[in-house]
Length: 412
Image (cartoon, rainbow, N blue to C red; front, side):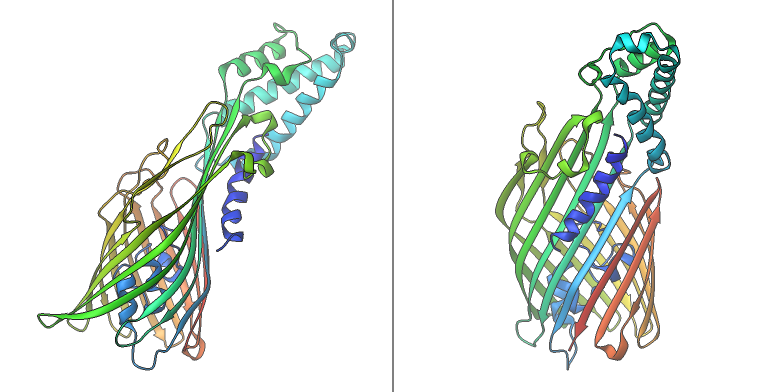
């Protein structure tokens, strides 16, 4: 029963990964995620198409092509330690519901069996109270990219997927009173308990797939190199609206087609980047500059709307051969379903490269709207022969939030 609420969040997160392709916005990139979710001014040219296409112009002489094959990340928040009680809750539900197949007359004639029924009802009521109002949130993303630098019009192809899932419970007072009454003997159990119990489980999920081509060009503005990049893209969105009795909640049903609504449209990303001196870069990126509202299917009388809105982020980076320091701040809010609160992130990060083939990273990301959990991030990068790049990241923060990511790439 309740067990499936957490499993659904995990299942949906990895469902996103399996279809693809922890991101603060609409991308996942392990190097930047390890640096507090930054990247607007500090991304490598080979991953710029994911974050700020203007940085495609930052390649060096001798760079011919860059691949991301792939980048994957996942994040989960379980603020109520729900997973610690999964087994007990599931067992209690099974122990109680098995009595619905036993005739009431037979239960009454067997005092020991009836007492066991009362004990199981009490256990289930107590554990339902413990999880009343809890929720599990998950985010996941992935990407594939091919970048071709040149001195005139560098370009890149990108396919990326990002999504969110949220599963909540609505444990009704009716169910608690009913189970309490059976436990204390004031209510006689009904063989049709599944019809009498009214608690619900709700799941909302959105998966957005982008397929685009980015181009960039560098200009000289008063002696300052300024780059502009754009990524027109096809955008495919799948929404899931799962609502059912918690006693019949099945994780495999979450992504069933009867709960899914899909939509295809056009969107565009854009970015600016300016190199101020030899060590400073200032950037500005705009993701999803075309606003779109997409409705879910109506399920159990409920409909939600997923909001795609422009996400504008500014960033500053200081860099040398040994050290990178960077910060990003969202100038607009991150919107999801209308039933959810908005977020707005700020992040800081650092990267030190003690050896040519080794990088160590750390950062911090905060939600200025206090909707998402604030997290500490970290990771390492390996680049043997400066040909293969393997980046690993992890995060941990408030409300039992954790996440991980991996990225494999090549540069030629």
